[in-house]
Length: 140
Image (tube, rainbow, N blue to C red; front, side):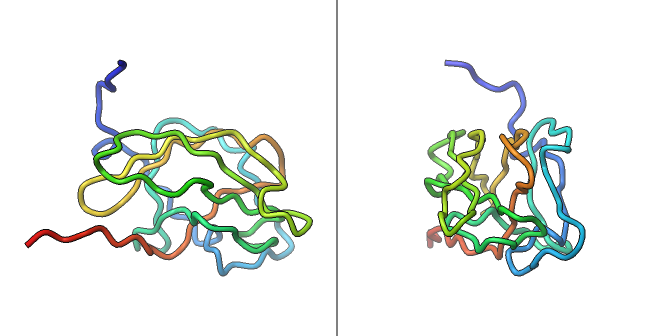
């Protein structure tokens, strides 16, 4: 069992790219995350609002790219710790046409997620960020 020295919930990079929004249809500039030097953990925001990766299929040509990447397998709960999830890219009417490199995900206290993104297997693929839809149970 390998225990991380630093909790990624307290040590992450902020990724706030409005073009990653699921409702953003690409324009003339196609974004591609295989050109990004990913390093460490990331928390997703859109214009300062905490969001999460979509965990259902996203329409082609969304998120500023040809084939938007979404989390296949759902988000973990806090008790799960760090989990590995597959990432799919929608193309040619197939929600998982591109089965990209898996990423690590962690649910954090405070109702947000962090992601250890890696270079996608292909271009033009980009990670999506959607509305924050996860509702964790509240304890009274």
